[in-house]
Each structure stands twice: as C-alpha cells, then as structure tokens.
Amino acid sequence: TGSYDPPAEAEVACSNHAGRAAGGANGVPQLPSPPVAEGVVIRPERDADYPVIAEVVRAAFVEHPDEVASFVERIRASEQFIPELALVAEDSSGVIAHVMLSWVGVEGGSCTRILNLTPMSVRPDRQRIGVGARLIRDALGRAEEAGEPAVMVQGHPSYYPRFGFEQASALGFISPNPRIPDDAFLVKRLAGYSPDLAGRIVYPATFDALGY
Image (tube, rainbow, N blue to C red):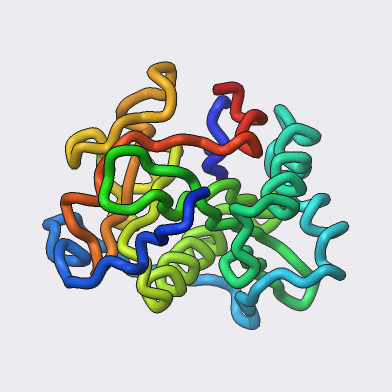
C-alpha cells in the first residue's frame, strides 16, 4: 500500500483561500472505515520514531526500499516538510504505518503550493486490515482542519478514489510529468476548494526519487 509510483516553495499557502466548495458534495461515494484492530493510535511522528519508520517503509516497499526510505528522509529535511502532517499509526507492537503530507508547487493557480500525500507505508503484517485507510482519512481530516483546500496524490486509481480522490486533470490540474498515468494523478477536494486552485503541479527536488 503506497503512493510511491513508479512501481506513489513559494510564500502563498493554499490555506489563505477561503470559501467552501466541493468537499463532500462532489458526488464521490465515501466508504466507511473498515474495522481496525483495537488499540491503534495515530499521531505525528517524533524524532525517536525515525529508525522504526525507516524499517516500516523498507518493509512496505520491497521493490525499492532504499529509494523510498531515502525519499522520506529528504522530505523531512526539506522546506516542504510539515511536521504535524507526518503521521504514524502504532499499536502494542509499535509503529505499524506512516504517511506524509508535504508541499508541492503549483504554477498558474491561485496559490503557489498545495499538499501532496506520499509516501504511505504499512508494515506487511498489518496490511489489509484497514490501518492504511484509517491513517489516510486521519491525515485528510487534519489537512481540512488546518484550512487546506485540497490534497494531491500520485497513486493507485483502484485505491485512492474510496477516500474521495478524483482525476486531477478533469479539474484543470496539469501533471508534473507526462509519464505519470492520468488515472493515477489524483486530487482530493476539501471544504475550502475553489476551481481557481488548479494549475501545473511542480514536484520539488526532493521528489527526484520518483524518477520524474
């Protein structure tokens, strides 16, 4: 489960744009969270979590473990990092999942940066029980509470639409690279969304690990 695909900076923040728009009224069905093992806690990551987060990431992305683990570290060290939106899920066994929302650039839209969800990792022995879904929903909820109008993701089109993500190009967003499949270039409209937010997404240098 992840938004790392190949296999998921400017001053004006999108949260400066007021107004309520599409949010949950865009016709996208919202599925309830599946049952998750009791005792799972979701919270922002801490410095002490970094080694075990790296282990979770490497285990989740077995095809390119070092690349994705390094990607996490580069986001964390960059100006695009948002500490309160880098989250872990933990249970009695420790950290079992991790997700990051960080800034990517927007050219030609009404704001110059927008949130992007990547990477998302779940420890293999905790996959397919709803941990990742709960973590994503929590991250989206925190973004909305912070006043952000939208979240981008480059991810699996069979997975992310269940959270309200939809094809970004249909809303006027332009992919950062033509090699990204159109059905994997997605956006989740939050309560503050406005159509004039759309523009060309620009990945920062930290995203070089994606190969684009």
